[in-house]
Image 1 (cartoon, helix red, strand yellow):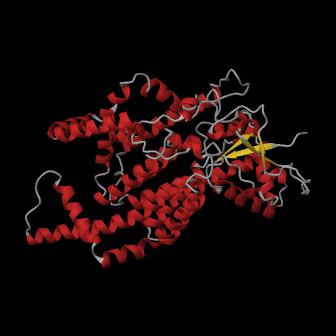
Image 2 (cartoon, helix red, strand yellow; image 1 turned 180 degrees about the vertical axis):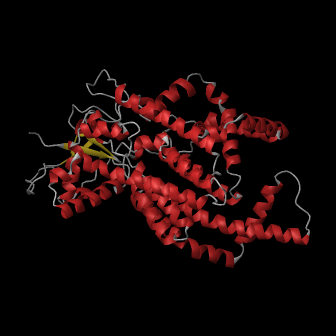
Image 3 (spheres, one colour; image 1 turned 45 degrees about the vertical axis):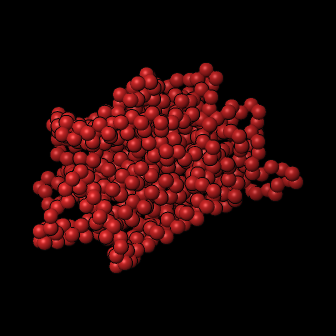
Length: 533
């Protein structure tokens, strides 16, 4: 029997034939044998027959990895509504976990796996290490055999824990963020928690062995600890989130920004009350509010007392940021592998895509006749400002729209069809969508008006830092900022929540039905392909 060959790509596992250009080659689990002189034990060239692939196993014809590897990544979460867990457990949908079992087997046997790092891996090994941290103690405590510990169900159990943890964290965050003085707020918080727990993009990836569930868990946990004032714990959890995905460092910065925004808001209210009592003449003219806030920030930042107070509150996050800077310097960048496909760029239209994504999934709260009417009245009232904004937006779409090769190559993902059949259908379409982008952005900002201007500033800065440098349009990148946004808007009426939940249920049913039943094959492959987010 030939040696099993595997290649880990970020949070995904690919077969040897699915990766390019290098492999990790391991002997099967068993007694450790010393390598023969000249024997390759870590990296070896891919065989000539291997088909070329891009990141995540992407290949010619739009491949992102073999179906065996894709099926392998399905993780079990509570899903009795759709009966998906029955399909996974009974084997009604075929999965081939052998490759990932080999990886975990090597880790369980204490082999120096991390010393054999493949250059195509793009993320840090948080998910792998935590999987071993769950599976290996279970083997010690219960005396289970390796066959049981590395079974399909046990491996899927890791994301089951994350998904349950995310549900509880969402509930705790709604209790902390949203006021509790309203009569119906308790039911609204519970319904909001359930709605976000089945948010289609997040819910779908809970079934796959991706980093989404773990990344979401540690980021939400860090945010919760920040809100409770446990900043050292929050920074530590932020580091754990960073180990799942490097861009999560931005949400650790957001936690620090949340603390700063709170102190700035308190000082701002004091300043406004002081001016009111002194009856000082208000600043008038265009952008008067912006000028007042800017003047306040300059005065506030000149105070050593204010800066020292903020430093004492946020030093754990600052330390984490320094560690991240050291990592970037030592590593030579944020991505740990396949850097040619993950280059940083100023992809400003990513903001527009996120606004549209948020408008689509939060339409019960953001889209209504009254909202449209209010927007049109505001446009007419401030037509010069909106004209300038439209011109700038058109310019950003014209000069800063990037099309990643994976977006054009992967015909299994919905973004492929959104791009080809909507945005790229005609050249003028991407410009005609600018008014929709502006409305979506205004509606999102309007829904956050209950938050302070400083909180909004911190949120949009972090949103910019997370998605704008990304060249690839992928809905997974929008999950975390969407959830944080959704947590912080005022609790909607129960009728809107029921509508939102019902729409999410329908979308989930359709996507899972398509994923399980509408399979297809590429001409150059006998493998079964499936549609996904």
